[in-house]
Length: 191
Image 1 (cartoon, rainbow, N blue to C red):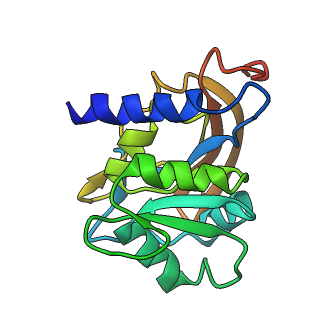
Image 2: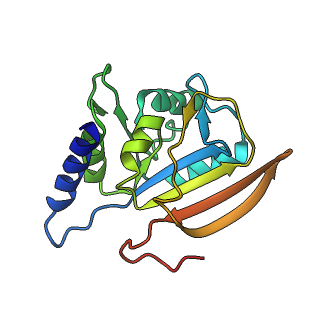
């Protein structure tokens, strides 16, 4: 029932724009282990400077939507110190001008900024964003990690690989990939 409510609210948001308005793109950004682990004890289970720089470069000038634990990690790492990103937090326990009790409300506020919207996690937020995101910017950390937080299956939602760049962090292979879902308006050809 909750998923139906979320999808209904998101559809209402998209239909409420006038015909001439164009909404900013909604993109998911994530670093994920081969076994889909994205976190352990509220933190990334790895420290890879190249991936961190990729996150900072990709989201610069954008609007971020993230859960409480993800926002706390962004604050702790200094990602928000330069003021080049605005963050909307999804939290049922915290209050404030940029805090929202549910994902659809945070997403609506983020879209009103008129800049690309970046969904930054965690697990529940990614799950709610998966049906409506235009693009998936994924770093595959190509090893298995121990963890307690997982990224949802994405291959059926985003079957179109637009680009891939390979790298290495010590013994760990990395793949920086951009996916798009089929049938998205003005999507480039799949590679």
